[in-house]
Image (tube, rainbow, N blue to C red):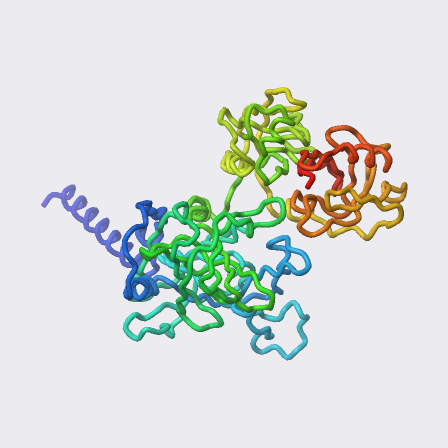
Length: 524
């Protein structure tokens, strides 16, 4: 063999040897491309109509077939849990319960002798979740894993019909506080393949549909409960000003069910069990709430990247739809559109010239049916996009454009301050709208940062379930305009309200937390 051929032979041999050694090392260190390229595909939703009979085996089969896809989640965290009102914007007796499996027990870290500050006490929590991918991806609630320093997952054993004692560590992949959803992933997998849950279509749900909840109530592992959909579209999630529509169900949901699946009669997940309404702490009274699965499914690609990005234009809108009578007062051709109640200073809407009382009828070339549709359009617009708007102001159509910015939830939630202290009660005015007014004193004007010379009266009391309460009028609101006419004194307010007849639409412009808010209501 010639010298050149010998050299080439040994070069090839060395290259093959190094390749083989590299493959061995990579496999030992788990560095192969296949192990690191774990991707999450968005599950397909079954939108076929829900049909077929229900018999004695229907719910038994759902429980048997789907329970293995449900997991128990145990967490540890070194911070105290948040106040419940931070999630729902509830006040007083509005006891919307976010639940961590009974809140767990506080303890100090192992080896601690009691010399650590209180914020070092570890809080243990428990919740539920469900597997959506064999790579160990699990959907649950944000409040189950928020702030957790350790997350461990336990599975269900179909043969023994109980929880597998082994626990597997998991990590947070992405969280969304607004929808209270979170995507976590097991960092160690069991030997047996994981079972994925199937997705249904939550848009198909109607009141009266049968549903099943599976979860970990009070650490009673993999418990099932059955009920019906009590209502859909309940604004029971999110926070004040950014409510999230939920599924209401009477299927028993208790602390520890949080994050578990709500299933239809085909055994497909249609919701994530999230909250309960109760008159006693941790007591189920047949009113539970689940996040529609379609809302989370749309977010999965962003949750996988670790961050959910939404658009924002810097307005608040009236949630109630426009009535035919209000549409006539606005000068609208029909009852479609979204009424702007307030415009944030310095935001995209303010820069574009939008004002409280404007009605948005088109967004980016598409007709706006109602406020919910406008919000959905905005949040799904990429930040930085410039979009045209068509609005009605003073019964005249106008065209304008604005550039959508990114929604910062932490910043938006942080600007919400506590209620102002009580105001003077002298010279009260009953309005017939379910609210009580008193004059604006110079001291109140300074404290509330009212613009000079503006403000006719301040709201001191709002009757429960009144027209004003349902429209969103609150204590400490200052009346600036009645039916789009400025009012600068109690006398102005009294005269303006006296001319309003029963059944008439009333437009109020109020000053709240440093900004103008437009409100529509109807006099009883």
